[in-house]
Structures are given as C-alpha cells and as structure tokens.
Length: 334
Image (tube, rainbow, N blue to C red; front, side):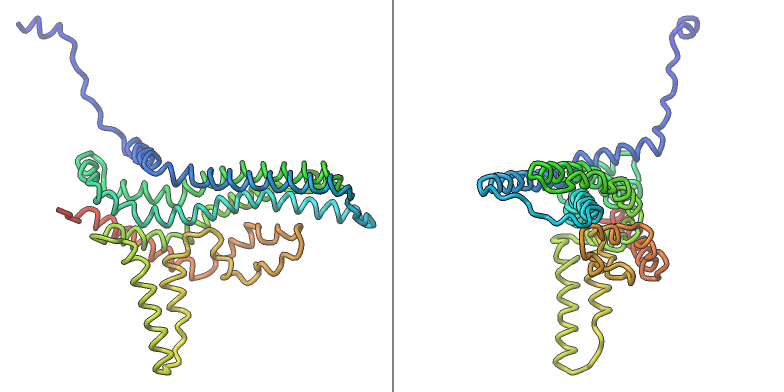
C-alpha cells in the first residue's frame, strides 16, 4: 500500500494569491461595474461635441461658398496671424481634453458618492466580504479609480478628441482659404499642452482628495439617500447660518464656511477648480488664443503645493477614507 502511495503524484500546495494580484482584480471589478461612467460617458460626450463641430464646420463652409465671399484678412503681420492660428490649434486640442475633464468631475462625484452605498444596497458587499480581500483594499481600489485611473482614462479620451478637433480646425481654415492656415499645425504646441495636462493629474488627486473622502465616507455611513447626507444637509446648514447671520445682523464672514463645506468638500472633484486659489493664474489673462498656455501651465498650477489649503485638505481626506474603511468593516445592514 505504501509503495502504491509513493508512486502517486504529489499535489503541490496552492500558494495564496499575492496582494497586488488581488488589488488588480479589484481594479478590474471597478471598471467592469462602472464602465459606463469611466469610459462611455466621456466618449459619448466627446462624440456628440465632435459631431456638432463637424456639422458647424461644413455648414459654415457651404454658407461661404454660396455667398461667394472670400476672407479678407490683413497680412501686415503674417507671423502674428500664424501664431494666432497656432493658438486656435492649441485651443482645439485643449477643448477636447477640457470636455472630458468636465465629464470626469460629474463621474467622480457620483461614483464616490455611491460606490460603497451601492455595495450594501445590492448586497454584493456580502459576496466580496466572503472573499480573501480586505476592506482597505476594496476602498483603496475605488479611491485609485476616482483619483488616478479615471482621470488618466479621461485625459486619454480627451486627447483623442482634441486631436480630432485640431484636425477639423486645420481642415476648415485650409478649405476656406484662410491666410496662413498652416499655422494651425506649424505654430501649435500639442506636446506642451498634453505634457502640462498630464503633469497636473497628481495635483488633481491631491486637490480632490477631501471631496472624494467626504463623499465616500457618506457613502459608507448613510443607511439611505447618501446624496441627502453628503450634499443637501451641509449646503442647507450653510444657508441657514448665512440666513441667521443676515437676519440677526451678526456680521460674521460666512465665506470660509461656504468654502470649506460646499467648495472644498463637494466641488473639488472638478479638475482645475483650484484656479481661483492661484494669484498668478486667471482667466482674465487669456486675451487671445495664443494666451491659452498661460492657463495650461503645470509649473504655475503646482504653486498650489505651497499652500496650507491643499495639505490640510489632504489630511482631512485621508481621515475620511480611513473612516470609510472602518465603517465598511463594521456596518451591518441586515
């Protein structure tokens, strides 16, 4: 009997999956469950914008051909005209990216607000708790998508549509005989625009952390209607304080309250919402297309890292995320 046993193949013990492998699976799960927001939302928004841009370009071209009028542009300074058209090219490229980032703000807001609540609502939290994955890993995967992977995917989609807008702008100016139309390509700065946008993704992650942390905390804590707890109650509370301040003539400055409760805790999920906090960066500086680089400049935007506002928000956001992990671990819905 022992001889027969010795001849049988020995089964090797199965090694436990590595923590990084588990985390990759959690990241894939988030994409599978929220592909509509992360991928299709910016793709559809960009497609609609591109369709209307092409229709507008074709319509203007047809209208010009029917009128029989040519563009009469003074070419006393052809270099300046070429640079202006280069700014148009930069604007078209950045327009595609900006559209995707606006969609990203809404996607991240509602994703962070519902990601932990929906797990409990559809009872899938019981399935995931039965697997060898930690609550910290689950919450971390959701945080990684909200602050890292989703912005990178949105920027990639925005770049693709920005290039399409850029090509449409070049073709429109060329077909309609605009003097110096080649300046759309020759004097634009696509690598500078794309590089600056990519360099600001980590800044967005730091800036949006308190808002994402607050929304995820409410998502984990609320037994029902997380939007009410995360948005309505804080905003109405600020409104009541402001109303009492006016009626009673207290004379308090409620601006910091609104800034902390409404702006930093809710609206920070929108990219570039930090611009009002920067003294050297303002939309008033953009007087013509080639001034666009004054706004899309990573070095100027990263001066925000020297402010206490950013780092206080980071600390608050981390505390909120830790609280969300704790609540997910101990929350009992049944």
